Image (cartoon, rainbow, N blue to C red; front, side):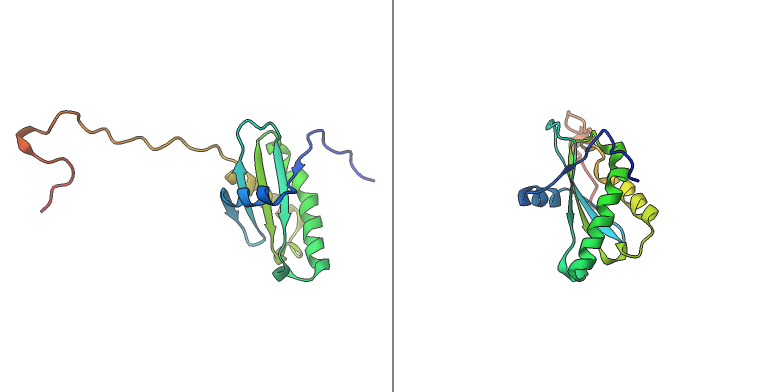
Length: 144
């Protein structure tokens, strides 16, 4: 018997421009998948997922099985990140077919943690003295 669905639902990416936009964001790689993400600010749509499995991975039945396994793992892995506004694209690899399901969930959790981190503040600029150096010395590294 199926478990009831979680109250927080995760959205789906269906349009190509969303997939392309996610490709320009952060990436996280494992042996089983690559995860790409683009943070959206203020959209209120929450976490949205898209899946990609290329023909190089295998025949249609194998690609579909990879996508089914990912679709099953995403709600479990994404429940802690459902409130974050981000578009996530998961690119599946053939190793997903033989991987333990708990390992897939762990990979997705690590990937989500990495790609949904808030942008860090810009590095602090070095504080140079505002007055000219004494005795006509030059700022910076001395040239020997």
